[in-house]
Length: 108
Image 1 (tube, helix red, strand yellow):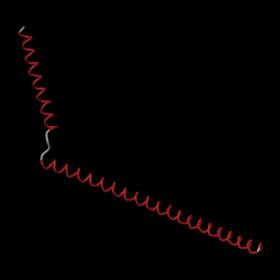
Image 2 (spheres, rainbow, N blue to C red):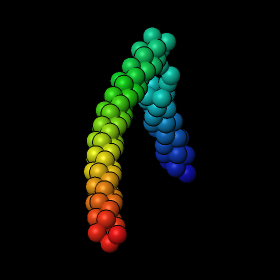
Image 3 (spheres, rainbow, N blue to C red):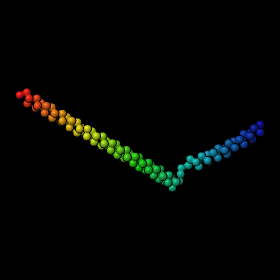
């Protein structure tokens, strides 16, 4: 029975040693960064976010200008078509008036 006790104790010490090594490695990996390293990481993250924001703003501005230009083009086309339609209606009214004058003049 003393062999079992010795084996159990050596297993316990081995387990404690392995557990301690794992704990030390985990604490090194998960430990908070030093002040300067943390400030540097925050600065880099801030710069990265600024770059992304600037690219997004430029993209939105470009798209807005494109849409505004397209709307302006369509508005100009609609204006031209409205002017053409107005001229066609005006010409048709003049033709009807002239036709009516001609009929009234020949009937009288």
